[in-house]
Length: 97
Image 1 (spheres, one colour):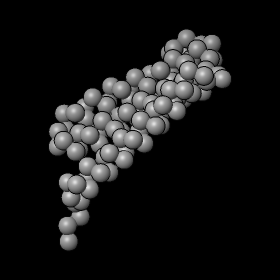
Image 2 (cartoon, helix red, strand yellow):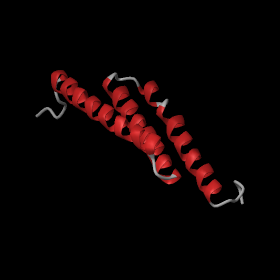
Image 3 (spheres, helix red, strand yellow):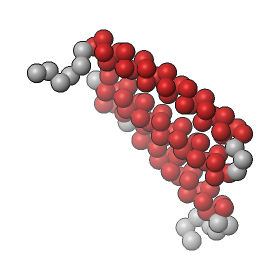
């Protein structure tokens, strides 16, 4: 019994995932532009970054290239760093206190 799907099924699933990713990215970008508050806008940036990181990893699996997945790590760390700076800004404290 073969658990690995065929190439055609993989391409179909990747096409569906790409469409969903583009639709979700549009909604997140609208939330980023029209966000009623700073936490809403930060959450939109976080979700965009994490979704893009997952998409990059899935694409690297499809291409059988682990080197492509390395690019998602700085993206995720950047989103985490943004969270730290915004939370410190909102709490009116210096980073490291």
